[in-house]
Length: 629
Image 1 (cartoon, helix red, strand yellow):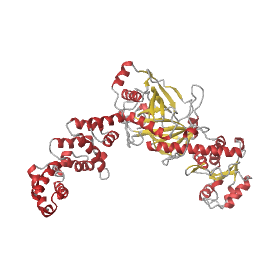
Image 2 (cartoon, rainbow, N blue to C red; image 1 turned 180 degrees about the vertical axis):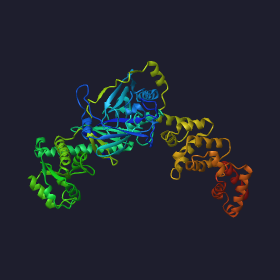
Image 3 (cartoon, rainbow, N blue to C red; image 1 turned 90 degrees about the vertical axis):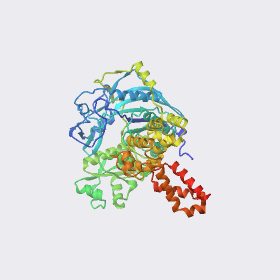
């Protein structure tokens, strides 16, 4: 397949940041790391940025503060305590979480630190009640080897997760405290990834190392993957919230496309002689142009007492509507910036449209005195809000003249990205004074290193080699984390191929018919116990598991009895075989052994899993041979 871009020529650099929740107690308080929908109490806070020890204020924190929001926190008595209401100093950190983080460091070829020092990272979007997140480096200087070369892992960190958002309003955000404090491992790579597929390989390797510990949470929201992407002449852009592994190459490709198109826009603006100082915060009241407008949005704003303000963008005509990602334009980027104040903007490249007529467009052009290559942007809202929105448009227009702005963006489901906030500065970290340093002794390091878990791929290879099962079965067992159950069952004397088949093929086949997530390991173990003791045939597993998925309160034994799936005696099986033979005697006489498949099918249908298929096969074969001579 032909690649869209020559990434080496473009100087692509990508770094990964992966956050994964650990399945332990909370990091600084001995309460469970669980989520709940139950709310027992609420309280409110307002947060403000503070200067670092160097006298600097983080720009991302400052931007959040300007929004003037109030934060409402919902708590649960079992999952929230005074530590996570910021009313009591932290305890800990949790010993198990620290041990798992060190294991992950070793699995990523990193060296653990001698002392763990927690730091405070300023976060004032309300997601941390205290206004900061606690984080510590636990291992350094790791690496992942790929076909494109080695990628460094400078740090493996242990930190606390933030609150989860319940509802975001214009001036109020509601958070739930249950997620706050769940331990997170943060793994950062060097920007040595030079191809989109290489990023996916590195992310998978890191994911495999995390899963190997069996102490990471699974499911939506338990893993967050962020990308840092840049090309020559572009800028470092942080892309947050990449959920799916397979989306990583597409998101990188789309960001490369975005930066290339922004550079082309920059070059065209420069050719037109546009300079940043040409873009001024001069806003023109053009409300009178739209007195009788058919635009519902503008008419609604005017009716509420609002105004229509316009800003002139010299040299921008034809460029605001230029596509920079599929379905997204420079105008979309301007609108993203303005959205903290208004729902949307109008610009000359998309008009006439949205009820705005050509006459109205020409009237605005005349009023602003626009030249042939000049553009305008309109906002309809109360005057103060409209001005704030247009200030953001002006900022983005100035950045377009410079090229690609450094910023944090969110990944969208289609592979595109959307502006979130400026890149955080370096002035948002300072020491955590409530937690003393934790010594990592040589004995502790040796003990963890000597008991490292197998990486998933190593386990797959061992299953294929030791148990002689198909590689695809082994991979599914490991990926679905049923491999420990598989080995436990095999140690009881069960045939590996049978166990693998039930855990993979049968369960996969039931997905469309029943909620298999209701089937517990205990259910599966009970069913295999029945088989081991000769109470059910292997053909009964499917029906038993299907019923358990629908009614998890039952036991495998109960289902086997209710459904009549307990094994029949050999005499009973032979009686049913004889019945089927007599019902189909003419077919057998005519086709001889050619009737074997049909007779087996009809016999097994009558037996409904109450007999071993091998025994039935022997009896049917014997009877047909007797009749056919």
